[in-house]
Length: 260
Ligand code: NAD
Image: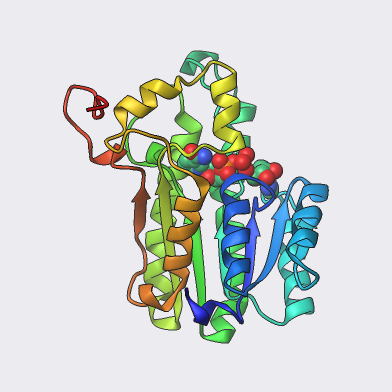
């Protein structure tokens, strides 16, 4: 669909599961070379192996600067370049009243989502600036746009990701590096399934609140990533694209979808 993506080296954090995994399959289908950097080393390696011998799976905690730098060094040593970075690693917030939340979790969540995105982008940008070309796709969330109670750390991290998407998109616009984000709505991945299974999220309530009447699928996000990385998005930078079935557009005091 996008032949220009074929020679690209695409580094995907959190690529062993969910949205990152869908991205790995989507970009591999376009012929790109995929590097998966994930906390789950075995899963990262197994996905890379399934995709084919040119791909690579690496262990990485994106909250650890030394590990982040090691991953980017490894990619550059092996492939000589990094064309697309997808910052997809993430964990869910603990859905608890604020006064019961603990600081360790708050800090860890910001470290993974916001600081992890920042450190990985910074490390890749050193090489993208030399290449005079590069593409960063961050994963924000509807939680970074609208107020969802109990989800302080997650929401603050996602809003922060959208803001560094703007600042970096502006800083590197003339240098050939585009930086964009996607704000997914509820997408049925292992992360969301776990929240549903724990009884913390009622799927039918989400469906009624979503104008399109259903949760999204990982491929919907992967399709938006492919578009943003492609030449079709050549003049788009610094934006957060909602891919949420209309969730954040809805403002009426009633269900958005009634099944009619
Ligand atoms: P997922 O749990 O299926 O996948 C997340 C992946 O990130 C896993 O493979 C996990 O091992 C990895 N990971 C977690 N912590 C890591 C760390 N410190 N370092 C490296 N890898 C780490 O979840 P998902 O639903 O695919 O979520 C991916 C991203 O999308 C997250 O940033 C999440 O906040 C965001 N998001 C998801 C939804 C949704 O509805 N699924 C909506 C909005 C935003």
